[in-house]
Image (tube, rainbow, N blue to C red; front, side, top):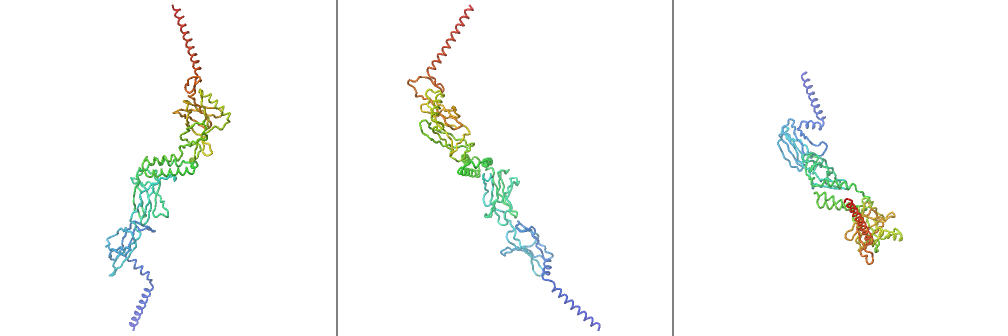
Length: 475
């Protein structure tokens, strides 16, 4: 009896245990069971992957088999094509594109796998889409502005820097691209780069690099510095609108010539000359006759005038006018004509009175330095003088004569008097002699000669008498 009871008890215990085991099995979630199974599976370890997006040049891949029998690994491309390999240890992976890497292993008689995706590899170097360019732009205050246009197939450009031949990093180029540009333009001022040859390296975010170069010896950096200073010192207010436009055009021509390289080339020289003209270092003066009466000298001409300190706006028309004297009364003019005839010392003076003025628009231009003015002399005169009437007095000006034209030098505009000696005068006129530019009548010359001769005779007689009486005493 007792044995029967025990058997029934054991059977009940076993039934309860079985029910409990089934209940416990049903109570475990599927995810936890899968996690427990996955934790014991092989693991593919990727070293060097980007932590927060982006690209790298390569990664290292290792497979931890965790006691399972390895079958090998496979690399499947995005198009589904797969290649299989025997695993012999960690390996480097540097193929661009989207790839899935599998680790195959045996679990009992079954073949299972684990995998990872790799789609962040960039192993292609950046590229330069054109040659290195050089920009000389005085208006922007930059002399030699080096620029490159670069691109990258995947990750993008991380930096562009310039090195010397010795490998020393000199400076970096700045990203100057805009949203509308498909590629990046990197540029920087290199006028003071301390190397004759620059190596320009573009590096993408994955660390791939490409290098090009530029020979700085083809640039005339000294001349570029010179015109940078010239442009910076320009006063735009001294130029008219047309004058400023010509100046800007001249400097742009010079910039292009300097960008092209070479030292003292004909293009650079021509551009420099155009800049000099546009800057108004000298102004060609237009001459104008306001009166054509006989008393006004003909053939008026002047060289370029320095107007740097005159306040003239460069680009305005500058006119040198010659005409009749109108600043004084006719009576005063007649007195001046008689006065200058007398002080000239000429026997037969020919006098011309005229006024010179230098203007731009309605503005009189003061002369900062003496101006050389050339006019024709009277046709019958071999000698002549020029006087200026200023401050109520007549003052003779320095002058020179060449081939029938007289050049005089003046530091002011005003009323001028040209006096020549008429060679044609003669007939009953008293003869005489012109010495230098002064006429001496014959009577004056004979009187002077007689006086000199008389003095010589008296001196001779006196000397004879002294010698005679001296000799007589000695006897």
